[in-house]
Amino acid sequence: MKRYIALMTILLAGLLASCPAALAHDMWLTVDNPHVNKPLHIMAGYGHAFPQSQGTEKERLVPVSVIGPQGKLETKPGDKLDFLTTAPLAKGSYVVTGGRSPQWYTKTPEGYKDATKNQVPGALGCLRSAKYVKAVVNLGGAVDDVSKPVGQTLEIVPLANPATIKAGGELPIQVLFEGKPLASADVRATFAGFTKEGESFAFAGHTGKEGKAMVKLWHPGLWLVVAKHDIPFPNPAECDKDMHAATLTFEIK
Image (cartoon, rainbow, N blue to C red; front, side, top):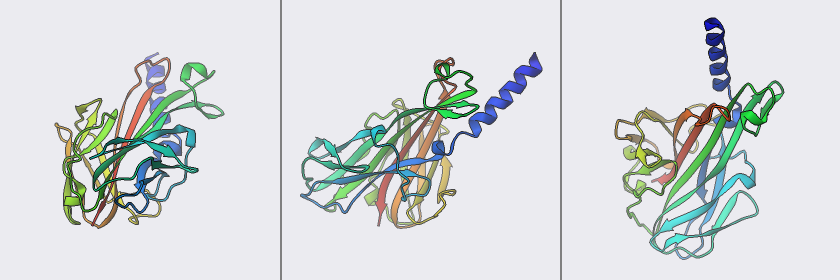
């Protein structure tokens, strides 16, 4: 019996490690040619090689919000995976937030199902994946404070405005999980054009005991920072692992 349990543990670990390619995808937000006194056009990206998007189901996108000197601005969805603020933006620094609703990946002999483990006969294992995205946008040369958490379950908080960091410098960040600092979180970063395959990053590290890390930004351009955190699912009958991924995008001059 002990050998059987050990074997099943190894098999399940292998299953969770070989989850579908979709789970390895990252999600991010970018903006299209932002200007003062114009609505902000926001695009949701999803894929392996930032910033080339492979697309995702539109109905899974969490509505995008924009927080800045005008308070919280609502957006309306566009025809594609995009959003537009319902009002023009004044000069200032803005934090744009969104995400992708959680999805189930339950393994069966026939493939993966978007359902909990106890809803799928013959289920072999289950992962639940949730994604949280954030972008910093500075208009009119503003470098306002953008370090206030917005309340995402897994969140990357920039402790300095990226506009104050030059290429070659470091951006201090803090990773929060359920509002608390997350130690030993996996943090990676890359910039547009670094790789076409999306299998490598320009920076890799981990957070310290206070959930903080310094991200080396050694190239100008559009940057993506990724943090991930996995925990056992609260109800093992429904699923095995709860996977959370957060991203932060910004531009470095």
